[in-house]
Length: 493
Image 1 (tube, rainbow, N blue to C red):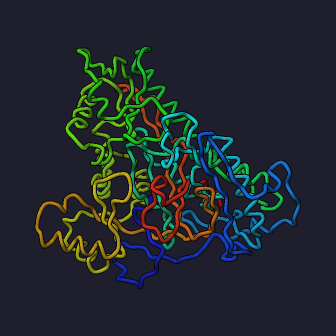
Image 2: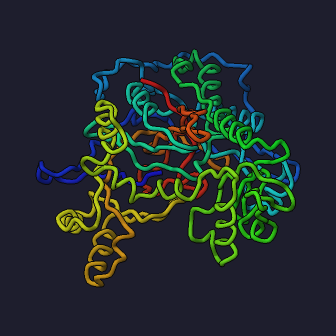
Image 3: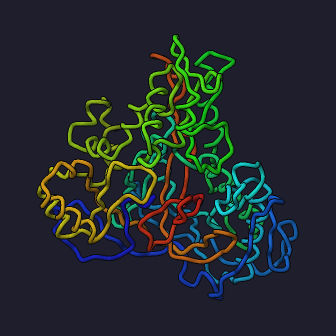
């Protein structure tokens, strides 16, 4: 997340450039809280699964109190690509700290009861013994406002494999611009639907106070649709004794049928008919939760394991070719004139796709490299990497480009330049480690998709729910697991 955005303002440059500029506004009012003190909730995992230390509990969801309703749901006209939206937006005025505390408490209880939890890396036995060392998933307290017309636009994009296409809504142009396409380890499909349920539950429980309609939060079936796609791939493999294997990193904290690349190298065998067996078990589907970053290949053993799987008849999710199709370089090449026409015939579909493309350039373009050195704050420099924390921003863009020019090597081919997107900054509540605090934040929408075919027969080709991630506007990076962002849902406006 956050591959190409900023919350800062810059002066105008020539109008023939393809850049956007921020107008920092907020969906939420600046006086969201009547009290600036931060609530403190401890949510500490122990070997008893959860040991929750809250302040003295106030009434829970089924015992709603009756303060005067707050005037939410103010109708505001919001300009979008499709015109103006007049649906009620989350416009919070006069919300007091006690209500925030109560909702945060209820949200944490709901999370523990409904499985909106992840393994806690600080607990040694987490991920090894089911139920031990769990903590709530970082999440936003309330859904993020998002124009309904743009949500529908994102869900119409091309779909291939088990992937997630990420977007940000540019504040100045009101365009929904694509950040990247994820074709490997498209994370959080299993948790994002729970955040949508949590937010609907909170809006229903506090309906009289918030005066918000929980039906404005879109349904999210990502986990069931991804599971269905995996199951149908297993069915197509047509071996009832085979299993689905998840390839994981050594310190994986999710519970699954899993093997590391090193384990697969030791235990894996390729049978004469192409069947992959691991520890004697036939494998129908290989789902990669690892293998997308160089650190996953510390030795030749891991490369041998990847080659073994690719040579087998097992269904790979993704195959190496599809993995490479998700690189930044392919994204940049698809944005060139007349390239989409090689793959699509419908001119309307081509126009819709191009409308989502941000500026993307190869470092072979000397004019754009010169502009990036002069105005580095308007660009993001992106390597062919996944997993977050790899992009280059600000003055580091200038320094890196200047260094590459002096060295005159082929290393510049490892990067692309992307227009930096400036999304709307909104005030919201974020919960991490049981602590609820207010922050200025930006959000990124991911749309899941699944595609499955057997030879020429297309079995699945559909949109599969969404992921909303929200983070502090001051942060360049945006990974949830890395501690930068939280899971969110969206409230259609």
